[in-house]
Length: 146
Image (cartoon, rainbow, N blue to C red):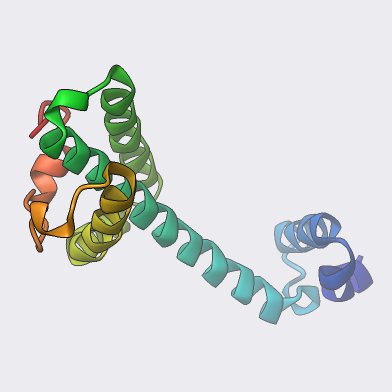
C-alpha cells in the first residue's frame, strides 16, 4: 500500500487516490503522499474558482445578448441563462466561501463575456457598456432579464 501511496501518483492516479484515501482512513499519516495530496487539493480549489468564473462569463454573455439583440432572443438563450444561474448556485452550495469571489471577479468575468458577446453577435464593441451593467444580485436573480 505504501509504495502505491507515494509512487503511484505518476503511474495510476486512481489507484494513488484510493491508496491514500485508505491510509487516511486508517490514520497511517506517516505513509501518505503529503506533497502530492497538498498539490491536488490546491488544484481542486483552483478548478472550482475557474468553473465559477467560467459559468459567470457565460451567464453575462447571454445577458448581454438578451439585452442587445432583443430581436434575436430565443428560448435557447433563456435556457442557457437559467442553466448558468443554476450551475453557479450549485458550485456555491458546495463551496459557499467562494461567494466573495463572485463579487471580486464580476468585472473579470464581464471582460471575458464582453469579448465573447462581440464575437458571437458581430456587434461593434462600442454597443456594449465598458463595465458590467448588472449587479451581482441582478445577474444571479432568476427573474432578471435585461
